[in-house]
Image (tube, rainbow, N blue to C red; front, side, top):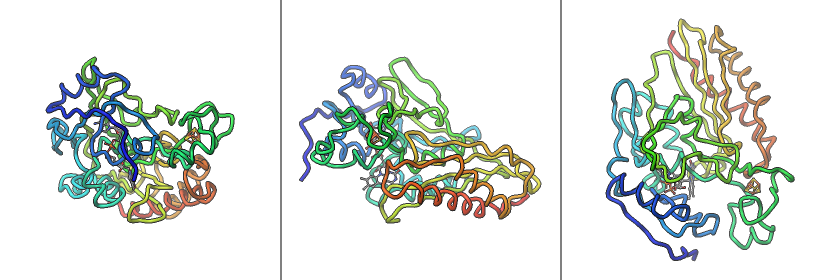
Length: 327
Ligand SMILES: Cc1cc2nc3c(=O)[nH]c(=O)nc-3n(C[C@H](O)[C@H](O)[C@H](O)COP(=O)(O)OP(=O)(O)OC[C@H]3O[C@@H](n4cnc5c(N)ncnc54)[C@H](O)[C@@H]3O)c2cc1C
Ligand code: SF4
């Protein structure tokens, strides 16, 4: 059985207390929400913490509210609730779908939106036991000096495997953050950096409070597609969200956000296809575009070239799914 090293657990009753605890304990403190990512990582020695600050009893992080043309989702909202909430299903169906595809029912009942967006990166060389990693001599992210995916590389290129990040980027989500310096807003797309060791660009002591998503207009549709080996539990090996904005039967703009490639989603603008009908030809072209612009690395399981071809297929299928948009 894997055991946790001794640590201190704090259970603040409000957001201000949580922020104060993070400031008091500094770099040795980690936030824990559902714990479905951080606890296995601590047990496997993939991450370290002397202090855990739990968000489970912080009421300000809960709730899904329609306000001012936006849907505001508290960072502590469980994925199972997001997958079945009537407002999310009505206005952001691709988000409900993405949340319903995370892991298993047990994990969706514990795992939160905030934890899913701040998920650690994954790599087949580090998501292993301590012994396995030691035998390899570690790596940049794990007590070593070399990256085994990109030998000679200076950055860790482990993949962000969050199911909700690509789809929320496609919906144009922004984040409410609270830290020792006060509150600030950040576009979700700017949350992620290029180094898989520190890919979540929160400032020290900052907490993700809520995600705000503008309600899409009648001509906007988003589809999310994920490929994993076992549909019932696995992380995505290919994931993509496609957003198409359509007026009078023609494309006016769009976004493609691919996950499970690098520490941050690959975001591509589809503006150059403005004026085109959403049909099989467009689907094939956008699939080819994704193939040309995205290069999966051997950082997660499965052949990288297969994942590249699979990404093109998933983009094509996403566009065909959306092709029934009324003009
Ligand atoms: C077997 C298995 C399968 C899985 N499959 C998938 C999958 O298919 N797709 C997928 O996306 N994920 C998957 N996961 C990962 C994980 O379960 C989910 O991503 C889940 O949503 C994480 O949420 P959590 O609340 O449990 O996060 P936690 O484990 O509590 O936290 C994760 C990280 O986020 C930080 N954090 C949490 N909340 C906040 C906040 N409000 N502000 C700032 N930082 C915060 C924590 O400090 C930690 O670094 C899987 C996990 C397991 C064990
Ligand atoms: S990408 Fe490289 S540095 Fe990062 S976890 Fe994998 S092997 Fe380690």
